[in-house]
Length: 134
Image (cartoon, rainbow, N blue to C red; front, side, top):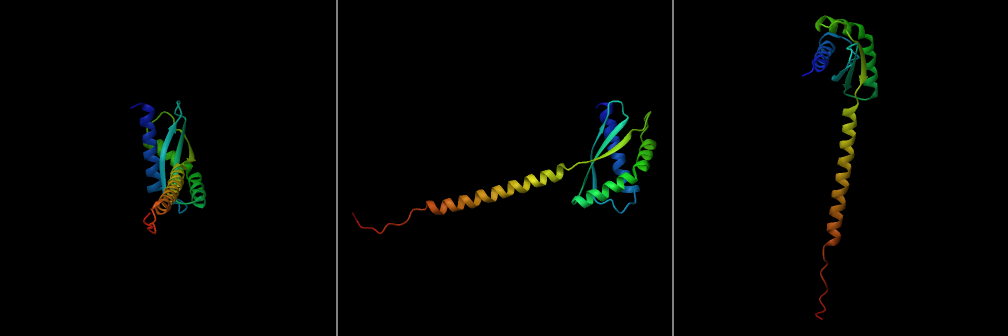
């Protein structure tokens, strides 16, 4: 595992622990740190997060993260020994919402296909003839 990968995982773990255990902001709902991207010079860490809920939950969570940014960065700097503590930039990760939307569309398509299949089966059944005996 490369040093950059190890640092990204360490930052992800520490930011997650800080948010869940040490930030006491009621605006933080159910938040998950999904990934961290660290620049090659280790000066900037993009921290991607996902929130359970809609647009209002994302907005509240964003405000809480912005207000706690200095605190989070300071604790990351204390816990992870690096020459420089990277600047932290929080980014929304909406991939989970996107996958839920895709699954919903696929379920609707499947339901329509099943309905069409049942209609086709009913229309293809042979009718009994009157039996003229010819």
